Image 1 (cartoon, helix red, strand yellow):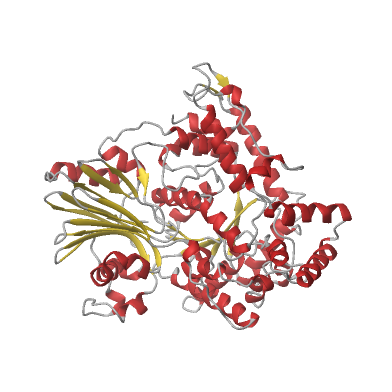
Image 2 (tube, rainbow, N blue to C red; image 1 turned 45 degrees about the horizontal axis):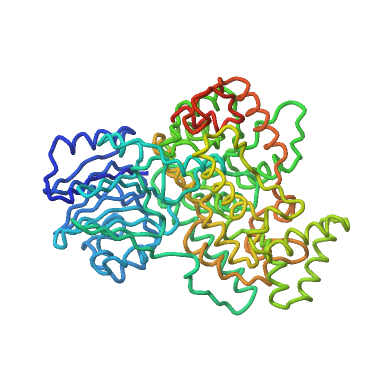
Length: 605
């Protein structure tokens, strides 16, 4: 995770050496491997670099070449494909840094270059000839990009806190973001932050900015994906496996140790297994460190329970080094007090606290995660039943429902409730959702808010209830697009990218590889559920590497983990002083915060 930063004075004034040095100091606090900046009159571009890929040690950033300046936080995966089309330095491919690929792509395709790049990236390019700054972010937003803009200047950077501090930018709170946070227990805005002055460049978007012009363009949207067509079910299964393997392989392009999450589920398990097998081809003795959020077992615990058993079985199969969570009340409180929520450093996934420290001790710079699969490739296909009915495939609908009833041993009452939630609700308009029987749309306790803030809270809860919490959509593609648009995925990516910086490593998400996400939008609905099992094609794609007990076992209610974290959070609420005063709450009277979320935000408001 490298940091980049800079300023473009739109009014033509020159950048001083002193302000450049100050900006560098705010962005290299995490002790990068290399740091530097370049000034060209009204433009400053700087970078603090973390080495990870083999090629990164051959490049010195920011890159200055001909009439261009470039800084980035990036990993480009389709290097061999791009090398056939681009003018690159005359030296071995393994000595050419990703910055050269990005710049060469810009020189060839201009503003269309971001759509040609595969990988996780955020970058800026100063085009001296055009007197234009071009900025881009990967299709979903794995790597961060923040900016401040007014008529005089455009300030940008990949670390929000450093960006604010470098120019002492305004810290006025954006009310709608606070309302969003209270409704969703996280900030799910994709463009806005908690601060009015700072915005995010959204994933799949670019900016080009001149003195008096600023344009934001979107180059990727799930609705615009060209549908992939394959002839048979077997062809789909083969394609899933092929892309899954490659998505893991390209993220192992590193000269440093690698680790992985391992919950024992269908997302993290195949990723950890594939990574372990690939690494052992060149390093047979490497025991992949894998981490579970499940609590460390104690005397009397049943290790045959699936929440422990699956991860243990996978780790034993591949000779991995498995660690469980050792989360405590004290660690949660310390995390809240040290992770500044206003600067996107606070995902409330406290399990990662110990993991990050352990990664840093081992100088691990790549952490694989199976997160993001549920929303895209490995989604459960909840809209299957509605889609089959709407398409007139009633026989397939009946057979699939019958198999599910048998596999889950569903009673008539459970069957009716299943049909109500998965078939009837999706075809109704959103406006009636919260009025339906058995639907518990969450509402705020409006009595604690000032009158001016109540409309914002109501709006935020409506968005959550209608978009985020709605059981499913009328089609699987629509359900995937809903998962992309509700902001949950982007929120996690943003938080983890900001939080990992201090520990000098990068999270990698193979299941959020653009190719797999686009494939998920084309998967034939008729193949997604069979014999009562959802994610059928994905299961078949990994059935030769994942233990059968896991592949066709219980997934993934995790009652023990949820009970464990719930007990800890209850203890935290009793430990911390939740008598707080926030200007968004009624008047200035001190009240008792009803949950940790409220207390957490109050620490920084």
